Image (cartoon, helix red, strand yellow):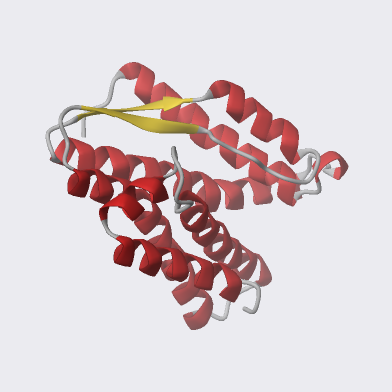
Length: 196
């Protein structure tokens, strides 16, 4: 994949800021205390939410470039700062950025490019589920695996909303069967995360 200098900067800051927002949320918002516990939660947030977000966007870019299209990630810094602000109040609403694509593209290819992001989150969610099931490890790792499962399945489900600018709108327009299989899988994994 080819990246511009600005794009590398945008990916870096978007990943760090969205991870920080989730770390603040998981630490109790305004009630958080900056300690070694917050550092551990920040690491968990980065390797679950941050990596999940970054890989989601990178897969959009990969498939777009594979089809010979121009694709560049751009961070929405205003929305990233809002995500951090909202996290202090106990919730996150985030639109950290998006991959902008230019070039002539068919409905099928547009659907596949759009599906690549949520599918990446689904694969990550399944990997975290497998780790939960096969490893009987310390509580901190169980929290890490469990959060990885819930946040990645939630990211997949959220992005499958069938309205623009969400990925789901383009997937639904291309192939309704694949759309519903992906959506049901994401919701199913998210619900399952509450029982593990």
